Length: 156
Image 1: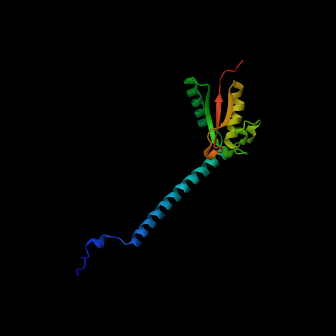
Image 2: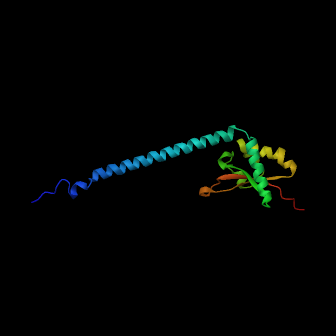
Image 3: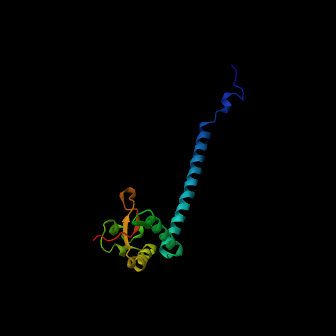
């Protein structure tokens, strides 16, 4: 009987154990990559939350709001979404806004409250309106809240 040579077909086949090890190494590398992505996203979210609750509306954000309004007006529209934030940042997770309950503005916190207060002191006296509404429902629950600044003439 003739034995196969060492460089024959059998020597190119990896053992099942080697394949399992390689598959496990690939799975571990993918898990490590996913962990790094989750860590980066968690850090980004934490920075966003910190920013939302600690920092104030600045000139840049006011300029962005103004550009959004001017663009919408130039397009013949009578409202523009000027701000959005997660409903979880409301004290009731957006329930009052979603149900159009009176006093919904009392559930606002952080920058959302500051934007609302800015509306009350600057825009409302000039005839603007502000509408808050849930703009998406991931998994069937309120996701983000949008503030819509309006300038439509009153109906008489």
